[in-house]
Image (cartoon, rainbow, N blue to C red; front, side):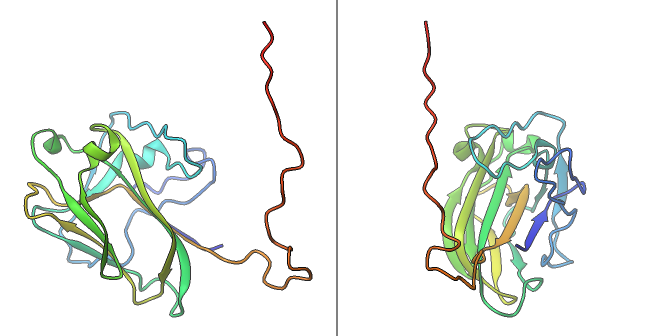
Length: 196
């Protein structure tokens, strides 16, 4: 499995139970981009029930862009051939400016808009609350792109706390039997019985 994890701080285990290395820079972003790194010491508790939780210390950092600016992340760091990817975009509004100004943007993958009108505090339930938008079967190669575009009504540009890409591969490409590599039915089920 191949993966890329992007975020500020170069954080690894023990902050992340999966020992994922979170990079400081976003590969594929134009080096002349006017993004700025922001961070907070406020709690950004990642408590949603998701197997792929991003560590809080990672979510306390973000890149943000100025009003009216869009950011395109090219996937030139990926192989030339097509592969299916799991892509997770993690957001938390951690900028004090956003308490009095709106930040609304859209998300496009390979030039196709996949999510419009992203308002992170509205989606997450407030400031300093995380939300993840993920796609589990996106075809990408070295000519792909991921784009965050500011809405014309937005007073602030897009924000991105973390981005994660996983290559989805067949675990058993050379199967002896048709069922090799397929999930097995559970061997047993567990019931918890409460006694009074």
